Image (cartoon, rainbow, N blue to C red; front, side):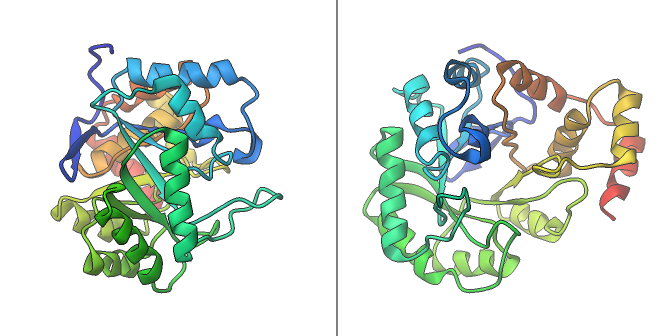
Length: 288
């Protein structure tokens, strides 16, 4: 492992500690997050670069592929370095059309946990997030039944820590009333700021917030302001978006995804970008 100092420092997930700059492995699967990658050797090379850079937080799911991404992680990195922590999620499956139908019945949750254990080649999962809502975002409703199933599996020693994903603030509170959580993974970026109050509350409680789609998602964030700031600083919009997230709150953990080792290195370098007060004030106006 290289002695690389990653941007952002570190944050605890329970008794685990991860760097705030992590890696999201979703893009390693084929088009639409289905099937094998077009460049299998390239996908393995990205994962080995993740380890070489000293990244200690990989976000994945048995639903990616399905099982494709987890198996790539296992092939590239198993046996895993002691400092590397794998965070996975359950609560959705895949259909033949590439959709993400919910899978939150107790038997679905148990099956997904065991699929993750088997495909990653581990006896215990570091963190499991319960994915809620749908592809359009969070939806109201109780998470008690699937979350209590995860708590049961945690008590059996199959899971170290729990989190929630694509959740409303009310669902986060409901989960916390059932069992401790170490992270919330929701959509959040410069233009999508609905979770501002939730981020601040979680920071005060020592709970990580993991934003996905830092540049807007599959439809990239189009912002003249963001482009102007990036051009002025001689960098890319993604670099500015990542650097802003690291400055936004100390409990924010980044998991930008890529299927290119070169792009991975660019993301790490870009997140080190220093944003001045005027830059931050200009960027903050995007989401207001």
